[in-house]
Amino acid sequence: MFEHVKAIPPDPILGLIAAHAADSNPKKIDLGIGVYRDEQGNTPMLDCVVKAEKILLETQTTKTYLGPPGVVGFNQAISALILGADNSALREGRVRTVQTPGGTGALRVGADLIHTVSPETEVWASDPTWANHLALFPGAGVTLHSYPYYDAETSSLRFEAMIEALQQRGPGDIVLFHACCHNPSGISPDPEQWQVIADTASARGFTPMVDIAYMGLERGVEEDCLAIRLFSEQCPELIFASSCSKNFAMYRERAGAITVVAEDSQKAAALESIIHNITRKNYSMPPAHGPAVVDIILHDDALKAQWLAELKVMRNRINGLRKTLSEKIAASGIQRDFSFIARQSGMFSFMGLSVEQVHRLRDEFAIYTVNSARVNVASFNESNMDYFIEALAAVLDE
Ligand SMILES: Cc1ncc(COP(=O)(O)O)c(C=O)c1O
Image (cartoon, rainbow, N blue to C red; front, top):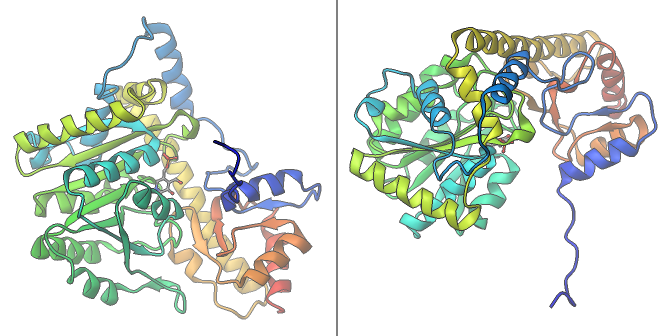
């Protein structure tokens, strides 16, 4: 049976990690993988997480299966946090949340749900979008199209073209959005633009699906949930996939959730039963540890306040790095305008380099980034930024 199998090329990001690890250059920089890093280049655990883990270890009494919904307190807390505790859909019992293995698990369960309830439904995602969206939806049998989003010439949002494309969508279509910290472009609609997008969804009748993987890392927890809250007020149906990987720094614990908002509570309950059926056939039950930790934090005022403070430190560091990097590039004598870096948010920005320039960064300077020249801004620090700018000037021939 395995006679004819051939290896497929590794995921470009995983290939970069391996190449960076094997590089002996002491100045090497990994700008590829999407994890937060502190000034020392580490991805530390949050103190609130360490404290909650201690509480969990002292209080848990069993390791028996969780049951299909996962950690129920986590589901309740994460949906209330994202939608806002006084959300009308929540009050009306039109919301159901099921814990999944990470945000990727949530997206896959969401894609399976779409394919199960409406096999002819197709999804429109931003151009560009997270590379895994491109694999994950077709992997679930859902056709993926794109709508205009990023203008490489101006490093900004193609808002008018985007709205024009969304006006072509209608009932039965799903449009996928990133709630904040758009991966890979770093560009988000501003609050007024989100309002126009929500008005368009409501007028045209398509169903919004929102990927919220970086909540709290753009402007703040409340602010970063704006799109989902607007959709939940203006549209009868909504799907969102949330992740606690980045904002709780719990990457490997795989804490995520899929949430559906339906027209009425019966439809919401029916959707929940279908999600349970999908996960049962797939991985049966979700893992407990990560979501149990988030459950403890979000139900404890002191731990929640500490989490918000730790999240703010990460957010401020990323935004500070964006400002410093764009100022230092401008001061270095490089003529090309990189001021967009400071106007964007989240971990990623496109540097606008050719594949050849990306390869020169890697081969001549041990600076690793994906071929699209998307960089993880959180990988910079005081000791590597000047070296990066020197290398950038060299590959730009400036
Ligand atoms: C846009 C986007 N969505 C979802 C995820 C999924 O995160 P995870 O599965 O690690 O929770 C990521 C992670 O990089 C992401 O960038």
